[in-house]
Image 1: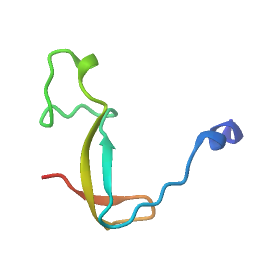
Image 2: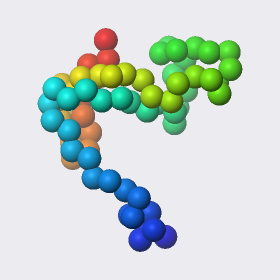
Image 3: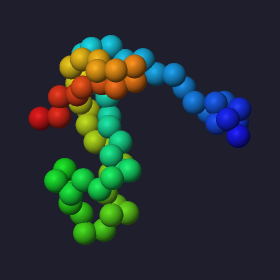
Image 4: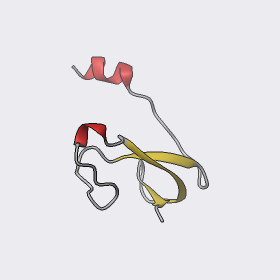
Length: 64
């Protein structure tokens, strides 16, 4: 299963100042955009600017 999953994965590296879209589908964020029908709400929010790198795969973005 790991071999099949690794075939589809891409290693992504971002630089400070890049613009990225953020996926917030895993948890419901009513404060960002509330829609009566969740099926029609967008999957990605942004674009947000990367401010700095926090960890190996974690980045801090400017969301305001």
